Image (tube, rainbow, N blue to C red; front, side, top):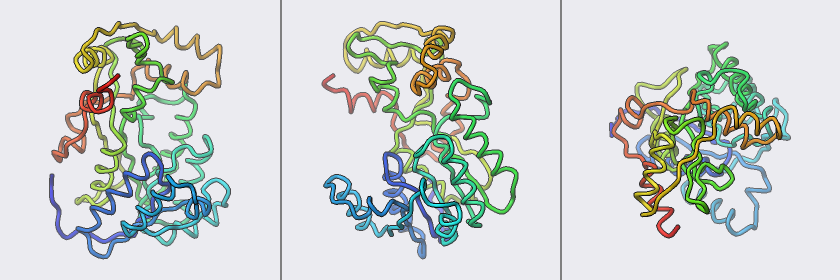
Length: 313
């Protein structure tokens, strides 16, 4: 890994401390030790900060122990003006709150970032390459993400960085996604067995995001690609056979079939995602040329993840 000296101090605000926010915060707290004068804060609802729920309380206590400051605000219910006042106190804002209130939130937060005058904004776009997918895809949420990109590109005051990660590795194996059917030992390939998907774990995204934030020369107004692994659905089936020591059937859900399924249930988010991934555009890129590969930062492959999580499946 490139060890960079003379890094500029930054005051950083992370929006949210969930599945991605926690790894980002933990890794920023680690990297910030190399950069004197930098501070990390996290924006959470007041009810989360003062929670007595044991699991969440443990996380809040952990973040405090890492020296991370708590900032109380509500991304959904606070106004653009209220949130802009909060963002304005920081150099860098990193969106890790996901689609907290549907398709309007990404544009609201991008508007807040520009209004606040924050120097650099990382929008919640930790996922696929929306521009390659294009407008009018089966997943209408992606059009909202394209609106955010257009807004950011149309101005020059706030720098922006988009981190494209592909799918969270665990999601490929989620029962609700139905691509991997463990009950029937079947992989349901989206589109074809040769279609690829890029996978990165939230922990790896956290590690790499922290490095990207402080990387020199500084990333400005660009998309940075990550990949823990880029695999075809056929390779996923072979990998599971290798890890679990039993055969997996290979089935193909074609684009017409998945579009028919979506027509029957047009509001079904998982069916929207399956149809987009089956089209095979903008959902995978080679590992070669990614930030982690260029900087020789180790990441988790699909097989390593499966070995760790499916030892007894």
